[in-house]
Image (cartoon, rainbow, N blue to C red; front, side):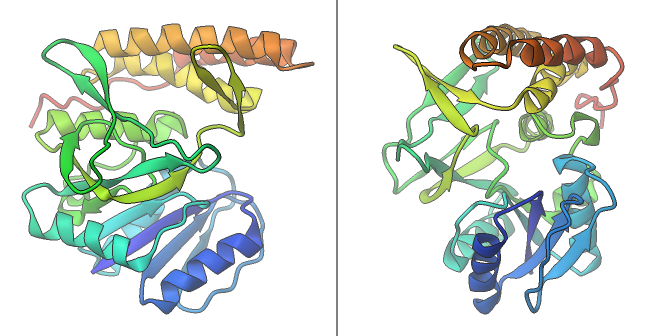
Length: 291
């Protein structure tokens, strides 16, 4: 029995109700955990849990996961509030993790605005570097150790091992940390390339000559800065991986501060705040080398 868990925070309520209604009409079991956005919601057959405060995506996902386990779930699919997915795709993802030796599966993702297929990102532990592969063949599958959380489908045996999302991270790098933690325990993510979800990183993008930079608010960038430093504390995260992220997010922060009009001080404050607060967050509580 598969459950879909959706964490919401100020969604477009009409679009969101339409999406969930389509899924519930197809028999999909849905648990919604709302992070105190105080939106009206009423769809028959949906379990709705409203938080008293915004506890972050990781904590909200854990609440939904534990409730699904209580209801007898055998697998769980995590979805973003703006993700479009059909019941057949959910069924294929859940059957994959329940009938194969790989208890974690995920779809591919395509940019909603540009139509570009996002590369599969994975960390090559042998060469100690980040790799990107374009999944051009949409008929096969492959395994990776980093995946976007939207569409991520997991056998409940994993959660019964108490491998939940890291609530200290709040939002950014939650999926990255979890995937790398499980990979070190021997569980890669199987990418089902025949399933492709629309996904967008950032509110919009800044277009430079050789790359596009996703734009997030200074308050959201705070967590990206903070958590890139926090990941240095985890034994299952390669140090070079963390240092690479720190360099990239620092350069990105500088570019955002320069090119987003009127936000220079706010981006500088979020950078300094993220660095300072990283010293008080994310102690070594995940030792993937210990059984």
